[in-house]
Amino acid sequence: MAVSTLLVPAKPRVARRPRPPGHASQMAFVASGLIPILAMFAVFAFAPVGIVLWLSLHKYNQLAPTAPFIGLRNFEFAFYTDPYFINALTVTLKYALVAVPLNLLFALPIAIGLNQVTRLRAVFRSAFFLPTVASAVGVSLIWRYLYEPQAGALNALLAIAGLPQPSWLADPTTALWAILVTAVWQDLGYNILILLAGLQTIPDDFYDAAKVDGAGPWPRFVGITMPLLSRTLLFVSVLTMISYLQQFTYVQVMPREPGDPIHSTETMVLYIYTKAFSNMQLGYASAISVVLMAIILAITLVQFRLLRSRWEY
Image (cartoon, rainbow, N blue to C red; front, side, top):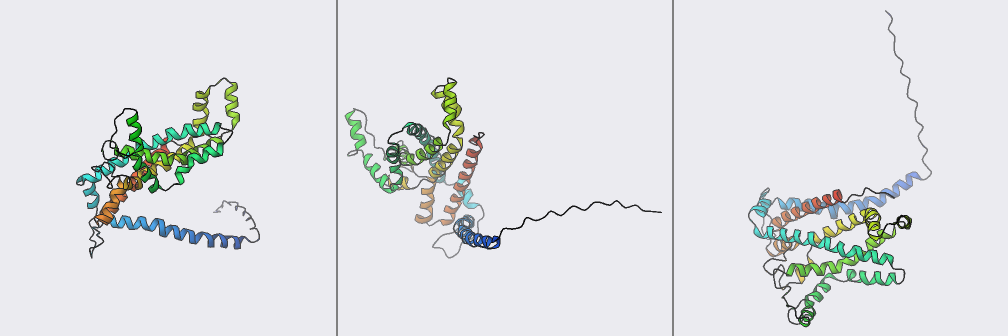
């Protein structure tokens, strides 16, 4: 009985592209340049995260000889027992969710106005950016003096206008918002420059065509500027949100005591600092740090989801 075999034609070999001269030396140069950078990134980025995760699962005190493993008890204590943690979480979210929209609400119109300026644009741009490069501690001290209830310039202006002069940093109802205004004022210039750079990448042809079609300023803003500026807005909003969720300097320097009055300005980073270095509870502070990292990651993912760009040009 004859057996027939089905002959499958062999696949032709694909000729490998010849590597250019010096390819091996180029790859060696790239590897020698990247490996130290990646090693430093692992040491200074991934290793600290791993250490914090390890500490969060232990009852670690800098002065104790041992650090017993306690699992998730630090997290349970934070959410179910510690009222000051819940207060710090509330203050942080309130601060960030108000400060970020407020910053963008001022930064975007100013950037649009600067984009229309033809003369002295560099002067105006430098004037708005100048507070950003100043020391946050110095800015906090200056604004703390402005908020002084007796000798402060702000209350002096309110007295001239016949308005009440509150104790801005001593009143729990106004202290956080006074600090928020200071932070927005200093950070405004950075976002203005980023948004201005994004506006300058939008071709003028789109606006010219819209004007020919009879579109006014508001339709041009809604139909052209906002869609084509969405990537820049995403970048600015994410960075600003991350910065405000980690607020520390202003709430440390401006009140008479950090977190005062009555813990109304105690953010999560300030609370972490207090627990780690004042109360010597580094394990518990690490657990709070993990919670803050998870919150930042979740809010960032939500921002990427809501503000993702659907426009190309």
